[in-house]
Image 1 (cartoon, rainbow, N blue to C red):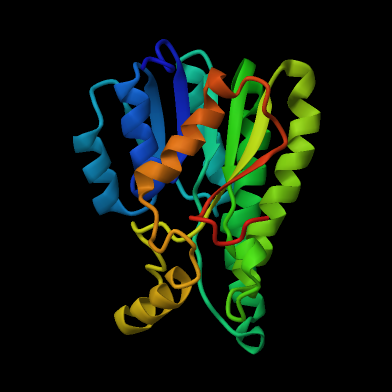
Image 2 (image 1 turned 45 degrees about the vertical axis):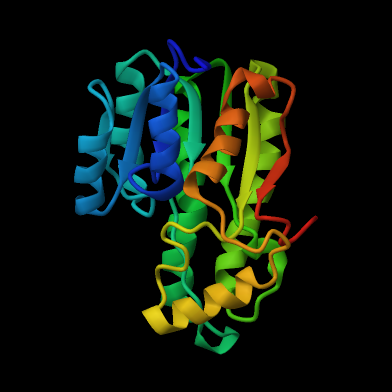
Length: 246
């Protein structure tokens, strides 16, 4: 397959997990990538693994000033053909444990970040480009300890629907990836014992009986970013083994 020959794809949160799996596949299919990350070790891994011509940037989605360098990177190559807004993070907490600092940190990374990124990158999106934003099955699960995280990922869905309408006159499509339990960095924010218990609890509810792989999630994102999905916009695609079945 060569769906991305001659294409430039920007993937935030592209130095590990689904994002890195997607970057590998874009380059394998003839494209060029710009990927961002925050963890220095993962940035170095991405620089080693991705082919020559790939751009790997340290960029913090929670920092409003970080959109400038991102837009510059997009502009240097004459714009971008596809954008996957995948950066974000998760944390658990009961309703009583959420305070203003926790709220502001997660909203900054998961909501304000992609909102400002799209605002800064919009003029660098070529006519007919595609945008994918990463939400989460947590939006629909109703789990007791994921209220704040689920709220941020629900906001992503609302944003994407509005963007789909706003960008349609330029022929730009906007869709949402809704991953469920994916086995790379899955609930990585939990201590080991708590993570193992939570993973068992979630996976026991998945009809397919297992966690997904980063490659499985990335395959759906890349379908949406490619011309294979040329008549798809404003939609949500779950990659969750049937967990929510909405």
